[in-house]
Amino acid sequence: MSRISMNLSGIERTLLNRLAEANAAATLSSLRMATGEMINSPRDDPSAFVYLSGQQSQLSRVQETMDNVTAAASMVGQAQSTADEIRTQLSAIRTELLKWESGTLTGSEQSNIDAAITEIENLVATEMDGKRLLDGSANFEISGRNSSQVTDVRVFSTGGATVTVSGSVTAAATRAELTFTGSGGNVDTDATFTLTGNTGSYEFTVTAAQTLDNLATAINDKSHETGVTASVEGDVLTFTSVEYGTDADVTIGVSDGTFIVAAGNTTSDAGTDVTATIDGQSYTGDGHQLSISDGVANYRLEFEPTFTGDFDTITVSGDALTFALSTDLARSTTLAIPGLHPAKLGGPSGSLSDLATGGSLAGLGDNASQAIRVVDEALADLTEVEGAIDGFYNASVTSASNFLADLEDDLEDAIDDVNLVDDTEEASRLVYYTGLASNSIAGLSILQNQRAGIVRLIQKIAGLA
Image (tube, rainbow, N blue to C red; front, top):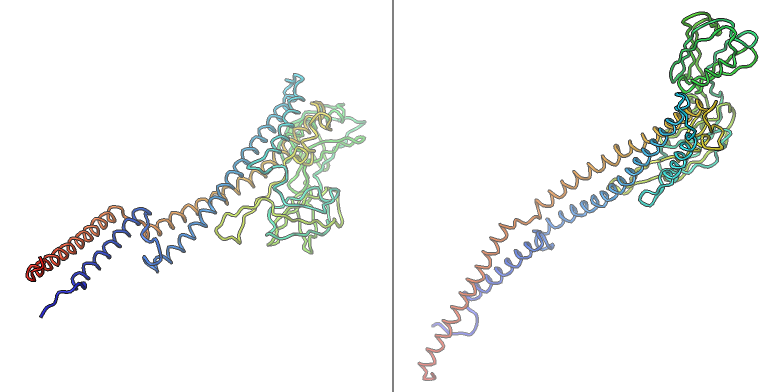
């Protein structure tokens, strides 16, 4: 015998369960469409949630590092542009100096040179993203250097450690040197010879009775082309290379007449390189410079050319310009930029600041050729610094940017494969589950109507209606 009850029947329970499931599924689809993500909480898929958390954490580190790379690219790019502007000013100075050689002086050359040197000072002081990079602020800190012993220290890397340098110079570098002996302070025969140094050659024609002082002046006026200077003491004319070391040479080749230098009409000489003991190791340099790479630090010492003996201990510290270009927080990349002040640019011939009004090489008289050499040496200094900046940009910044961009794409693809919502598919699911919910509600409504009809029938039978 069946019985009418107010309790839920089995079919009602089933419909209510289906309604709850359909509503939950429809809500989940709506959430996924709103967020664009398949996994919005751990209960959606615990293992996938853990995987996604790891991938998203790595992606966040990559994106933070890319911000660092972008900042580095901006800063180093500005340093490149500013260094190019300094090169433009140096070229302008050289152009003014060459007017002396071409005989087109107007009297405004020195003021133009002064203006260019002032502009270099201004460029060096330029801030790039809030930092000065070309005034020495982006270099390592160097202390203990005695300028009468070591004229310059160029540090490329320290491995993050404080570096101490001590030792002694066992033999100073020398210049190449040839001598010619005249008579009574004059050249004694007619001749034509070519003088060659490490920067070029120039042909000179001399005549008997020409003074040695006159010839020395002619040689010095072309020293920027040959890299060779001349001096006179009594009847001896000495040819000397501007640079030091085995790469600095002086060669004289006689093409007409007689011009006897040392052992004959054609001869040459080369300088010698500095030798030193640094931290117990013996080294031979390049001219009066010595490059050291000991597996931790990489640096170059430039000794005062005539110095020998023990030099004062030098300490290198600081971080120079350091960037985090890797997702590994323990790794950093360093760029050291030495100061490019006019007083720092130059070489054996002098510094750029010597060319300014009041300096030892101001004016375009007898100093002009030496001044041109100074500019060429300054350009060589700048080229080395530009090479370091460009190399850092290309090898570190650009490569890091490319690597991180590829890694970001890979991570985003991996995350999308698991977590990206297909809007069309999810919309179809939403329609499907909404329909199921509607059907469940309709079924429950039918059951409710049936139950109400049975109650009314019983009431009629019982005479209650």
